[in-house]
Image 1 (cartoon, rainbow, N blue to C red):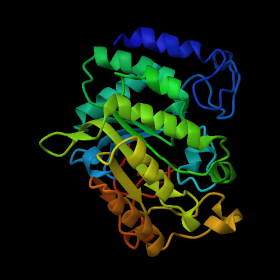
Image 2: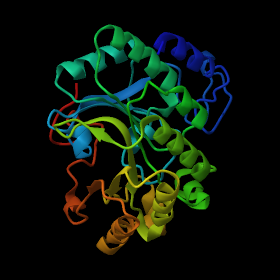
Image 3: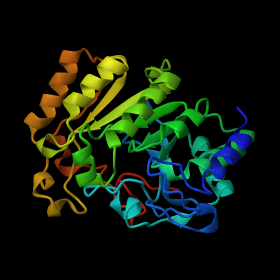
Image 4: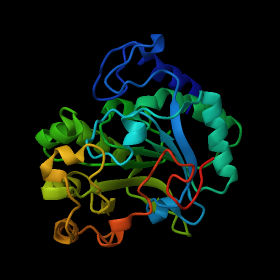
Length: 316
């Protein structure tokens, strides 16, 4: 894989930006802003060994996580709203991004975890090209909200080792109401299908650390807003039950959630267990579940204005 050539092909798409499913067609190379408002130079909020991801991702050494600012979704309940919606962070050119990746490797992280990478794919591939030449050999994790363009995902074949997408909604009306994106289900399912074609089920080494594959995150929202049982049906029928699932109970009514009565509360144990039970009935065996009660005081609810974003460790 010639990463330099790929980064140039991807960067050409920024002239009339079609990097994500919005296909805004603005010229980001000349400073125009599209739906996500992301400029050309990447903006990074934090970078750290993250110990709060799923066990195969965090392991014992942590996941080398880069939290990018800006997002192509406008989730009214986003727990990362300080960086995804309020655009806080610092510009980091591709050379600086590559240096951060190498530093995380030196710190003993198991992988390089790209959080909200969608708007920055060309720049990330450019940074990766530099880092690989300097000895970066960790798996790359694509940690996305799931509103990706399937064509861009196809172009990443051979670049991304571990895909970790959300499958947030099975109803486009809910996706638009709470995340302000159109046709989420179509783009999300096509992209995840392509991710599975490339990477298959999650593969781990002898220590249980992920090396390649697909891990799907399912965030349980109040009042079945996400329609996750339908999503689980889709995964079984179109992918496989060998897909590693992360069924998350960590929803918190933050940011603008108070303006929407339907989601202005935590989920109940019965709402969460209903999704878990459905997954088990369908034959899913691999995955990660949480204790809804434990998350009342979630130690991994971030505050990106602090040096210790997750209260238990500092970034770099």
